[in-house]
Image (tube, rainbow, N blue to C red; front, side, top):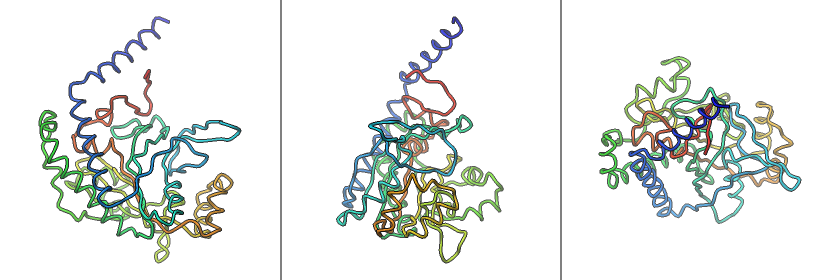
Length: 318
């Protein structure tokens, strides 16, 4: 019992010290500035903002294992929201909405092995989607919004960055961002190509062609390749954004589901919409708010940009 009390006291001390950290207010102001820049950018372009959901009968299937967290309510099973990918697609059923974004809290109960410098099991992403757009359209949009965010931060956060001991050279991006395929990077850097390429880069770049969730579209002109993309932060900060064109035709959705052994019954209503031709051609992406904040403020750990950390594999009391 004494050892347990000591361990809990240590957790309490760590949590309190984190909240009292002198640099956290400046980091949070930078994060607030990122979100203000996003809102202004979207508002000027009349991109519809929708409010987030925290749980749903269906959510992102992900392309890696996480602990499931199901909740029973009113004789129905919900899962915590891993991402609003399917809700983004379904919102496009409204004929008057052709673009949207969400500042979306997500919960992905990552395995303890992901307790590294950039993973959280509870985080927020800026998630966006466009109707009748292509990968190329979205890559251009990403370049524009990231450039706008960095410009806003450089104009409004110099005192904060100065106190944090951070310059702005890493925010001086020239664009358009370079684009590489996963095959190219693997041939050059080996199996850990994303991390190695990120360390070698001095500006953000796109990494395309990832085999992952069923909703990301396969390139029908080049089967076995995919119309999706990640944005990789340079200087070793790793992946910061993920997105793609979406499968929208019934036969393609079912084929991809079966390739990945996705539970079709769980997605029966989504499949029914596809049968009715009510899943539209869309493309989009989402970027982590904590990850872009970490890159801008050049913090060594993702936990450094959070008040209440949610790093996998650790114990928490708040």
